[in-house]
Image 1: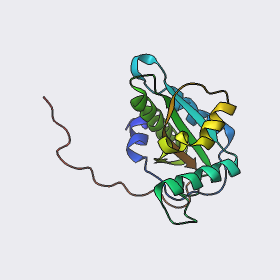
Image 2: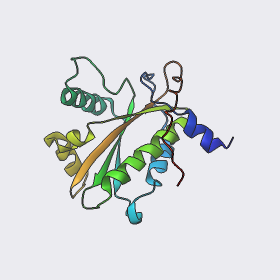
Image 3: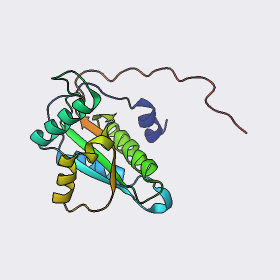
Length: 174
């Protein structure tokens, strides 16, 4: 089987990560895959915030926990040491789709590189917060941006989950 198709079929959402940070080289490759995702009319409306500093990663995790209303002490990022927060420029009509494709490419790239990943929602609410707006301003980011999601990545702690059987009847040839 083609290696790309094999990786696409074998990728799973990982819910337990080791604390070890992936190398900058691996993270850069994942980010590059995200930057090469398709986008509406080639506008490339998404942006990726690579969060590897533990205090900021932990603050973002706590913010995410509070937004979802999870019990105190819960890590919605499942211990992943790196968070690739995808934003998309709201002035582009296809921004949600563009950001979603960026997320998908990065999740598939993480798997292909021997890492695990998971898409964690609530990026929209995170980016709308005063704290994250201040961070964007500090980074020189201007314009209207919406958080699409958190691509949490790291080394898998345990086994890759087995695939869920595919539902029947989801394809129609016309």
